[in-house]
Image (tube, rainbow, N blue to C red; front, side, top):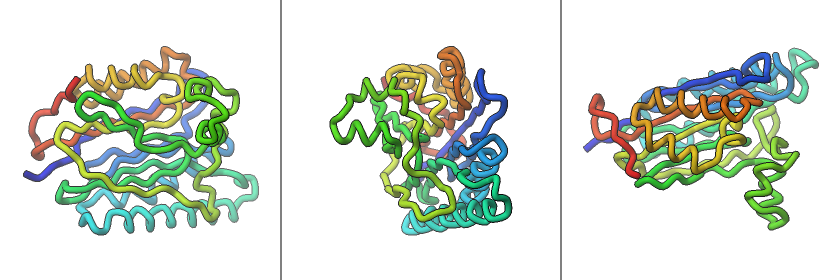
Length: 251
């Protein structure tokens, strides 16, 4: 049995921001979300550069090449951001988060690349788990036991990112996992995760089997919560065949 990845994405500028600095890719082999920073024009550019660097990976890839391909794409993104900053001094400080999932052509493995505070969640057997770890000042405080997870959710510095793609040497996190039929992946910018509780995310992922409807529901939840930031959502399902029915996550 060969597993396949089927996905849908929705992006919205939110209710406060004048534009959308997020970029997204949702294909048969690759899911990716990038959240730009450093001013409107520069943020747009940085996230676009990141997605354009990883989008060529949306092809059949051997499982033993997944991480290496992601590493190469991230290095390409970083080099292009560095070049963009060199072209225009006003772009100094621009950068972007990146969370990307690459599915192997056999369906036997997937790899994740992550830097920043965009997130990847996995819903499996009705249980939602955050797979990525935020590169943020507040997450450092949680790790050191200085504040609780509950306190982190409302901390005034929760948006301070400690690592991002900015054209400098960084250490993204790379990992691999074995997919399972019925897995549902959520990749999102912090415009969703900062304002919608994890249990509410899980409820939506379970209640909306249609991927596009589910992605739209998640965006709507963030808008109902005030939509203070750009909101980007990718919902990806692991299925048992190329065109079969969408599996309803257990729960």
